[in-house]
Image (tube, rainbow, N blue to C red; front, side, top):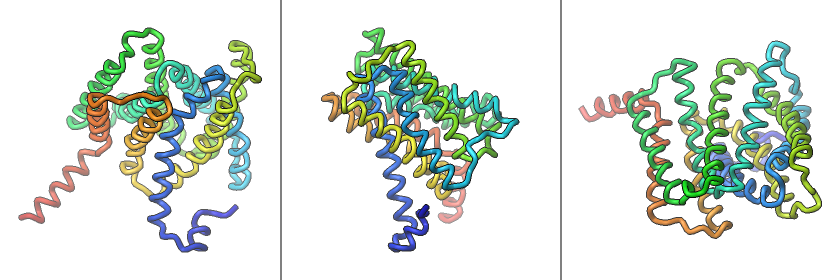
Length: 317
């Protein structure tokens, strides 16, 4: 296996350029994920589609684990945690996202899911007893008021099925946030490859089996576009995005990297509006900018702002 550092040395690409390219690729990969899900569920049932995505991803994770010489088996004391992650991070949330995208545009889905770091902040306060600062409360308020205005502008409150789609996506974001906090509390010693590989495999097989039982999918009727979208989700979004993200996690501060959640909705909205033929009104654009600004405020540690402000005041004195 050729590592990125070896490639960089071979063709002499500066590290900061590789980091910038990978950051952009993560934003594009995660930004296009929502459209790919939309295309996948056009002709494949949501549970089956979620399962097949992970079935395609699992062999690649096994290959990565083998090349990295990392075991995919969770330590004995973390077997319950394995069940928790499989259900609460992979199985249920991705079914909910797929279900929601049957009724909600891919761009709005990305915006709804971009609220996930806010739930992380809230769960951090409840479970880890971490303080929420006044500026972060302000960011949360701005973000969710803007989100409500965007939903209202798209008329989703008039359709019960669309409203259920919104709730499903928000619930998936909340579940992911909760998993991140529990992982921070219980699973920090588990390898990232171990954390993903076996849960993805189990979730993929379980969702696919349940899909065949409850959805009775006719795979011969699944379009070529949906199959390509499922392969893209499994290979590029699940595996490629994972590798790039965790490469960056070791080289960028968590604050800088967390802005992926602010940038990828922009890609999703542009690409989704083009594919789905949606016209984004000026009012909606205004509230999208306001929403992303609000969520950005929640990501900036107030103590660093205070520290930087103190340094600046000393310089000007």
